[in-house]
Image (tube, rainbow over all chains, first blue to last red; front, top):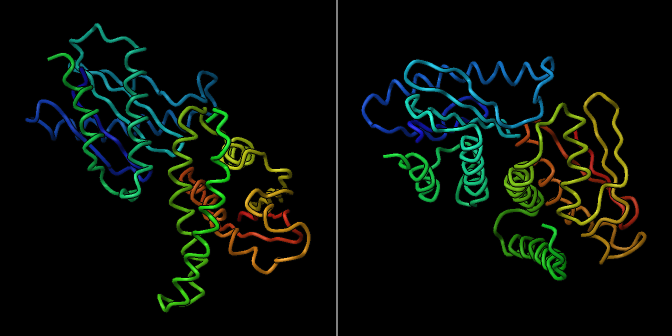
Length: 139
Length: 159
């Protein structure tokens, strides 16, 4: 369902980024990069907005004609960005939320792995498998 | 985290004690000077703290400010790790926080009073690292030091 999934570190560099289909990958990298601005805006607007200021799920960041971009930020300021195909209208908010929860759970497992140094790129196969399962559900 | 497991606290206590004595034994046998043991313990605590915080903050809401984070550390974090809350939190509102625990779990088995006071810092280093790791993952750079005046009470000062 998801077309591209990215994990961005606190300092705004990507820890993990993967997209399907594998051509045009640069376009997705660019999309994720531009969505970071929107994420920052949502996090900093927290003080003024009255809605959902304490939630981790950020919701729809911005839609384009081909796809929609969703965001989620953890308490350790690690951001998850998910790009979803627009033609797939069956995807509801709850499903996106549950996908982000699964991502967060897997990320926590990676973090607790003593062989992983925080700040490195994520090479864990378990994490890869989980992301693959989220991306291939439709095809 | 809420299952009534009876032995897990003791397990961590014993492991921690063994960790400290193991490190010092290795130092005596020539693997680096003595002064580095406390740093090693603190760094171990740091990495563990980072992972633990990620797991504990998974379901909580986003934190509003520094004080919110310190309160979280005092209540939820300390309760999950040491099965009790911090007894006293003081701040000078300029970035220094003092966490006081009157009956620190890792020290209760050693003594109550002044006996063995000089050995206490070794046993506090890991927890200092734990707090520092947790804070660093939440975005706060800090220096954590610990003081013991009378066992088993101890204070953690976070800068």
